[in-house]
Amino acid sequence: MKKLTADKLFRWTATAAGILILGVLAAVFVFLLIQASPVFFGDRAAAEKTISSFTGGRTTSFLAFVGPLIFGTVLASGLALALAFFVAVGIALFISHYAPKRLSSLLSYVVDLLAAIPSVVYGLWGALVLVPNMYPVWQVVNAVFGWIPLFAGPVSNPPRTVATVAVVLAVMILPIITSMARDIFVQTPLLQQEAALALGATKWEMIKLAVLPFGANGLVSASMLGLGRALGETMAVLMILSPGSTYGIHLLTASQNQTIAANIAAQFPEADSLGVSTLIASGLVLFVITFIVNYIARRITKGGGKLTFRKKEKK
Amino acid sequence: MRTPDFDKFKPTRSSLAARKRTDMLMRVLIYAAFLVAVIPLVSVLYTTIVHGITRFDWYFLTHNMRGVVGGLYPYGGILHAAVGTLEITLGAMVISVPLGIMTAVYLVEYSAKKRLHKTISFFIDVMSGIPSIVAGLFAYSMFSLIFGPGTVNGFVGSAALSILMIPTIVRSTEEMLSIVPVDLREAAYALGVPKSRTIVRIVLRTALPGIVSGVILAIARVIGETAPLLIAAGSISSTNFNLFSGRMTTLPVYVYNEFQQGMASCPAGSALGTDAWGVCVPGIRMERAWAAALVLILLVLVLNGIGRLVAKVFAVKTK
Image 1 (cartoon, each protein chain N blue to C red):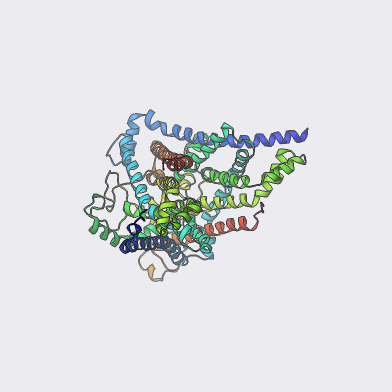
Image 2 (cartoon, each protein chain N blue to C red; image 1 turned 120 degrees about the horizontal axis):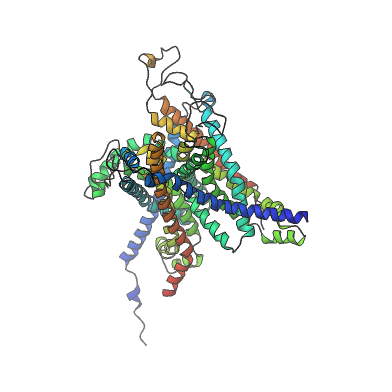
């Protein structure tokens, strides 16, 4: 009889832990909402004054305050993803198909080391090592691609710009995309690969025919997860970027954009209670954006099997 | 019957060469991609070691920042930050390890195919996507509402970090529990062992190395978190041993603070080393930031190494 109750007790504890997690997540949302509410439902004049002090008198509405921040966040992380994606796929292919078998676990460990380094160290490295060294690179980019508005001048020196931030963010999300892509590439059916080779395909053609189509969904999902990580990254942006609050798309010019996360960290220490509320409200916006991105990523992973199946049927 | 003209299908020599060229080009690009990833890794490690080693000594590890002015002696250290990191991380462990492991037990052992299983699983995915700064804001908001506005202490930081740790621990534990063979469980049931005892004595025991390794890796992940602690735990220049009261500096926050303050001011004449207290070092803050970053990297790498070693050495053979 005593054992039975112990059994039940354990069961209830486990269930309670699971439900507590749901509670915690609900609490995250509720507490943030409560703390953010004064901005929207409190004293209008005071809220407007706070926002106007955050934006240097540019605006008094929350949307106009958070808009450029959203734009800056998406711009920096999107660019980081664009930079990281092809490199990550290349590394994953290198580990799964090109490197000698014995080396591959060592190589994936090297890539995992990139993920282990704390973001504040990346920030320090970015600000003190990368920024001084990037100026000539951006000058070349500007000279060659200057006709594209994104790369139009003037090139700031020191380049504490979105472009430099994107490079650091790309390094930070590289291991996430790589490790997921590698796991998928390794699972490509061996028979399909051998069939491609037997038809006389070169190694690259085999990869194009068998490996990449098999991994396509996984790649999209992996890059979404990487994007989610880049969206929430604070320290690297905070320490490198010279902030601004415009919708500017000139990547090589400083003081144009700022991200939500970095803005929170920068303004928080000096904010009064209404200022904190405003920042928390912008944090909620960030939460929603990352939630959507991660949700899409999970949806694609889950539907992945079906999608490839359907494709096969069509053929 | 006419034989088909096989020559029609013969690849021309130039098309073969083009295919080979493409193959070679892609090979080179893929090798290059790997090199591109190694460059930042080597650069980060190299610069941190080279810059960090100048201040990295016993003095640095055993002194805090009290009474440190400009670039003058005393040069200060990271004792307070190390204590803060240790206590806050321990606090986060105390919250998230039992919660994470019990949730994983529930997900694997009790809730299969129930609706609650799907819900919890989904929200753990959501949780793992929470940006770290939002976790910091959450902990700050919660403690502000409960203990009065502006409550900032080490434990708030622990709460913030545990939000980031829980999903990692649940996922790794879940994986470890699900590879424990069903035979083991069935053998225990056949001997009349109740379920809870089976789980604790057989399943958790078998999966223990994997779980420990997962926990260590989760610690390695959160120990470098800066943004949430910047908000939730603040910073202070003296050593604070009390997790539940007063601000607490942690190593990552220390790195950021030192970096942010820029060059130190030196009184005229002291830079030459004539000062009775010692030489004034204008770049002292950057040196301290690099040295603390070196400590942080060493910490993370050692934790990672231990985590992997535990998983490898103590792994229970499942076959």
